Length: 222
Image 1: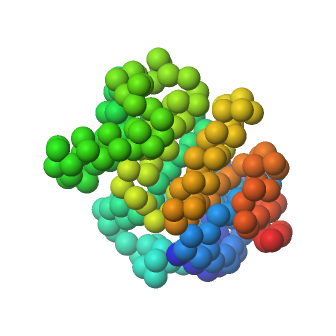
Image 2: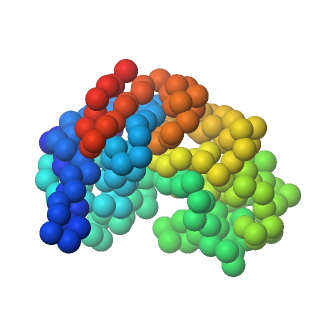
């Protein structure tokens, strides 16, 4: 699914260079459930952003489903990102003026799916995520757990090959966070590759593969 070879990411801050990732070599198989852990500044989110094509490596090669995405144009990268990668963020990133259903529908609109098919898919995923009764509510009218479920529904409505979650329970209480993790794990059981960045050791330990990072490098991979 994913093959990173000699990936480095260097940020320039004034006259200083910060090496956020240093020569990362990593492969992830289809259907894997991976957690990435480590202290703040270890490179976890930078790694996730590179895998999600939200950022570009300074050097190295990234293959996604055997396609060298580092050599693609911005337009082609955007297409791959939209069609093959789903994102879940700690702060949800929902559009405030849209309802839950409209937020979920947005990727289908961008992908050119006809209206009738869009409505059918949105209705189905609202039911799967137990959000039918909240479909017409805007984000400000939803609880944190409901907003994260909307974000998950939006991220998975196009059936991405890989789902990237950056601190998906960071803004949630323990009970609600457990419900969100259960929803992600159900997606994994359906075959979705899941990579989650977390500070929560309990959540990280649930993954089948646990990667520890420090100072921009992988220090353990169990």
